[in-house]
Structures are given as C-alpha cells and as structure tokens.
Image 1 (cartoon, rainbow, N blue to C red):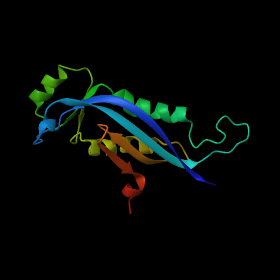
Image 2: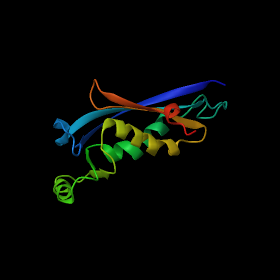
Image 3: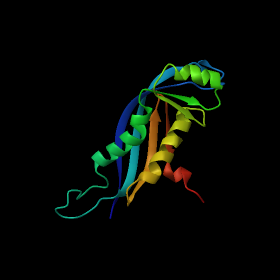
Length: 151
C-alpha cells in the first residue's frame, strides 16, 4: 500500500526576545508564524467506514495541533529561562500568557520543540514526517524525522 504525506497549515502570533543576543532581536518583538505539520502513513481502507481512504482525518490533525501548540503559543510571550528573575517579573506583569522555556526561542529551536511535543502524540499508524515554521514570509526552519532518527 502507498505511503502518503498529509499536511495541515496553521497560523499564530507570538512575541519573544532572544536573551543576550547581539542584535535587534534581543528586544521584545513578535512574529506572525506560519506552521506546517506533515504526517505520513498509509490510508485506512474500510468500505463504508467514516475514515475510509484517510491517513488521518484533517479535523483530528487540526485539533491535535490546535490544543497542543496553537492554544498555548498564540498571542503568548516566550522567553528563555536564563532571563534574570527581575526581568521575568516585569514581563509577567505585562501579559497573561508567558511561556518560560529552557532554550533560546529561535525559530530553529521552536520547530524542534514543536516536533518534540507532537511526535509522541501521533495516532497509531501515523508518524510525524516534518514540521516547518516560518517567522516571516522569507525566513523559516524545518524539522524532518529522517534527519533526527536515533542510531
């Protein structure tokens, strides 16, 4: 049976700051992120079954990414846990949605973080193939499962 890739696109707005960075991105700023999640698997075949011909129901993929990523990241402020506590407190007073992460919130780190969240949540017979995250219309990072296989 054929292996098929299925992709769903998402959009969210998020602010961040790059701690100790030597450029303008050390300032608090935001992006309009475009996220593409691609899964792979074989289409289910069951005549008369509601999921006949599907690798995954687009609705199910949408709900998974929405609850695990979009609902958490959209209109949030993401900061590195290395930021001094007094600055964290000041930033926390400006927002109700702040995510403190143990990494520099670059697009490269974010795409790997998103993949790490989604990969173990894939339904049986479906695997995360790739994640693409664009922070601008001209700049994006990609994560591929094949590049990250354990030996």
